[in-house]
Amino acid sequence: MYTINFEVPEHVHFIGIGGISMSGLAEILLTEGFAISGSDEHESALTRHLSELGAKIYYGQHAENLQEEIPAFVVYTAAVKEDNAEYQEAVRQGLPLLTRAELLGQIMANYTVSAGIAGTHGKTTTSSMLSEILLDGGLNPTISVGGILKRTGSNIHVGGSDYFIAEACEYTNSFFSLKPTVGVILNISEDHLDFFHDIQDIRRSFRTYAENIPENGTLVIHGNIAELSQFTTDLPCKIVTFGLMDDNASCSFDYAASDIQYDSYGCPSYHLFIQGKYASSISLQVTGMHNILNSLAAIAAAHVMQVPLADICSGISSYEGTDRRFQKKGVVNGFTIIDDYAHHPEEIRATLTAAKNYPHNRIWCVFQPHTYTRTKAFLKEFADALTLADEVILADIYPARETDTLGINSLHLKEELSLLGKHAHYFSTFKEIENFILKNCINGDLLITMGAGDIVNVGEELLKQ
Image: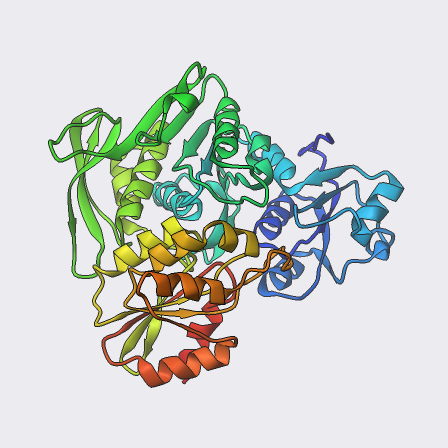
């Protein structure tokens, strides 16, 4: 694999530079003095931002994009196939090729203290929480996350210190390229079954990720993960656990939450215990039990990174959320619009459970399934989770990287909901969904647009009414 010399900046070309992760890595290299070029199918706010910083952006992916100025190496995403014109041209020229994950791993290795946040769910939120803590504490980390941080207005922050924070994604085993000094595992469940064989295959991958943590590093892991020893036995690094105290106030975790309460908007507060001793009172500005666990992981990681406890508590309490994570968009005709990225049954269940603590008359969930393989694999689980909403509206499946070869669609999900006694509405266009909402949502209702695709546009259009 090609090794980057950060002391001798070179010209780098990104195939698919407009993605939220790729654009962030390109910005980091730009700041380090590298010359950046890249291509994407369409112009976006991210590509315009890179252009303003000095990157050369091509729209459309063509061999000649690599012929005008020949780069030292080329970076590509998992979505790029071998028949991609730029990929083929890079091979023809004999240019070194790095995956996005390999580049992220090399950037991470360039920092003394690094955190990699892994888990089937909660990576962006927990990475953002940890980022808020370090920023609030004046440590000025470099950050690469999968959502827009409210504090910085970006998914990327190029700091001026030895601290680095990044998400560690399990899809295609991308996190195998990372060797964080602090590795976090939030949770492990079935997902990405277009790549993984089953839950045991996924668990093996997380074990490999844990083994990548250096001997002088630390694994921060949710203590209630099933068969925890699979991930902790014989690891050379230190192991720190987090979780919730049980009803008997028994604490078997290094970092634990107790005496949980919720305010009128569903935001929790709790007592933080460290090594079984009361440490502080924590109040969050985000909703749901799942965010208590996310906050515990962020607190534990920050503490391991030697951040003072007072700064940790201040930072976690000032965190106001990330875009598309139970994000309040506004109010239309008296009903509140929330947008959420949930696209897995466990995430849907967590979001809708949190919504029950938020002021509402009826909870409407406008759900856009994400990918055919995920929809087919979890059809019954999706239906079961969606029953937590009072009213369900289904949009067509967002295909992302896939094509429809499985014979699955949103009407199958509607049928599953019907079998559970839940009537759902289905519309093939966003315009039909918007019109139906305007006719049927009433004052005091809570409308959640949900999914990892472009369902957010429904709420955006309603707010223009």
